[in-house]
Image 1 (cartoon, rainbow, N blue to C red):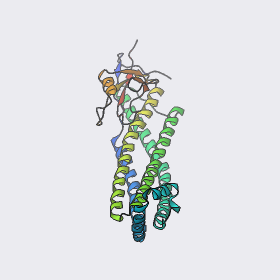
Image 2 (spheres, helix red, strand yellow):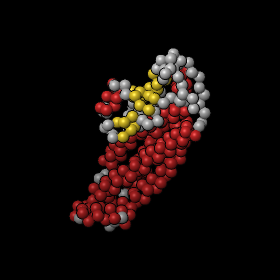
Image 3 (cartoon, rainbow, N blue to C red):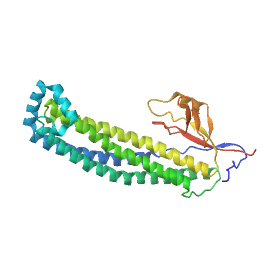
Image 4 (cartoon, helix red, strand yellow):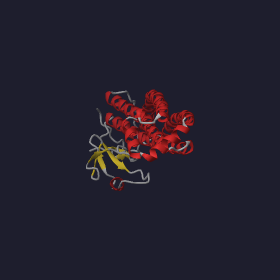
Length: 294
């Protein structure tokens, strides 16, 4: 590996490789489309099943008023065979069938979306770093090295897991909402409102995933590429973004904290070495350093 030297003979600090907003927006849009399709399907099928069983649900609620603790215990032990649970059992059958269907759809979509995201981020990060280096008088060609491939595969794996978890967490919450609605004997209106609120929660989580993963993936790929071309040092640059800023990161940016790219920077607040963009909600980036002639 050949280390790059500043062409002017003096130490040169390069521009940072920032996460591409367009990739984040498109990632969020694709997640939103999946979540909305799932939500509409759940609303329709649960609504239809609920309406068919509303008289029995009202009666079940009256019984639960007499024995609330015993019925709650029965639900937790086995909702499918709880006492007087004909409406609940019917709804649970519908929900679990929907859960299997939508989890399968998200599992399949996760593989496609994870690959798209990792590939697009790799291409964009490489192009941005090439442009930054070209402005400093260097022309480089990136290959899919073992280190780059490991980073690329790690990005895919993490995003596939997160996308699958969106469906898993949402469907678990929906099942709980329906069960509690049946126990309380509520009609469909309040349940539909709760499903809408959960839809909003899930969409916000998906938006956070798109933002956070875009920062992380860009940072990881850029770090690997910098090491491959012999850049060994970087300076921490605080993003000044987000509602809650980490004081240690603000200070590192203000003090232009330098660190070895291979090791990362020691964050006293975390008690360990980290890299920009590694922690949840961290939007910090690094500025690679080209050493001068010694």
